[in-house]
Length: 292
Image (cartoon, rainbow, N blue to C red; front, side, top):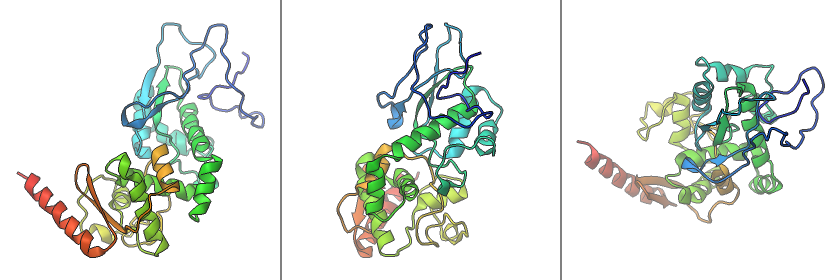
């Protein structure tokens, strides 16, 4: 059988890897889905080729949606379900030494942040290694542009650190319009040597998602506890999309150091702690009024 490289196919291991080739349509007219429009959760449609050389003509691809901000654990679960694999199979594949996903050295083999949010059509022949590799390869291309690299340098960050910051922005912003302001808060606090104090990083450490953070939570010894530790967490806390990364590279202008979403669509940014406390009090009042 003639080997033809496809985005979802794992690389051959008998020879040194070759530069990727541009996919071509065969006589059978293989279906290629190129990056397309934005779907729900701002995901984009990406290319699909078969994991094997042929497929039944009647089979139609099934969409696997990876929303922006999903953690790797959520992506693995979705891949297992989409491909009919036993629970934990995708995680095992992603972390296996033989898989060797094309991650930056700073990631140390952890694909968090690089399972690019998109809609991935899958077939019965789609293999988990090829699909995960394609997600990471897509992220590498989207995050590895000269514009992103230059933007990262302008803020004294590596591209990987920019992805970490973008994952926080993705998790913290109430809506896309707030991302550039949230990114400015992150930059301002880092520049002042302040702890980020982001609930999203603490939630990641505790394996949950909530807006209710207790004093006990903030005493966690996790390196993801940005209440107790200064600087960025060691890895991304989710998989950010293009807009969050763009916000970190080009944040809004402002002197804000604090923000709180008082109500859906109403995020308040403040430069001083007194104003922030007033906003938090309003947030608490809204929460109390919502409770039965």
